[in-house]
Length: 195
Image 1 (cartoon, rainbow, N blue to C red):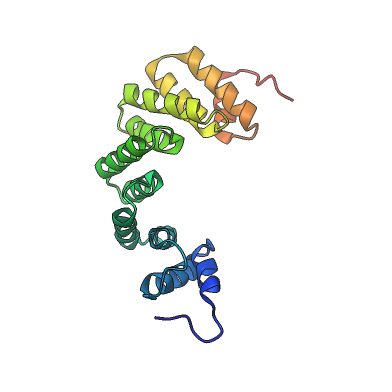
Image 2: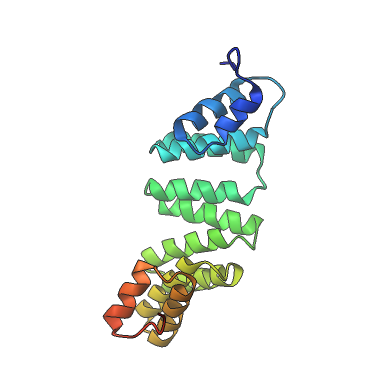
């Protein structure tokens, strides 16, 4: 496949990065198959195409492209986290956990990988591990309301309502429209103290 007449490699790269699943798959495929000196990092082209594949529910294609991206750039933590997300979406919690762990090993400051792994642990009932990871996510990304909210849920499940309430309030401070936190406050019969 090649860029047709009137289509520049810059246009193809723009399509690859576009966020539009169809355009991204086409543009990234051209970049990957061109055989020309890469107009963009080849690992990135595979990663963008994987995102586009995942957006249309093609887990197998997304995993294959992420495997290639990781083979080309094994030190990029985000690739492991993205592959973990695909494994999670396809129902493979064990492989998702392994990839989130690999992402954290490669970048110990990767809040998103802690957040995702903490959520998997929570869902599996491994609450101490969930609390540990969600706390790391909160410390690394203090403005990320979902991390506070998900940690609040873990605190509630562990029987720590005071800590849960503090996290629910922090969630609402960061995002006054967070529906889960608003519902929790209503169920608990507590005022948000915000107007």
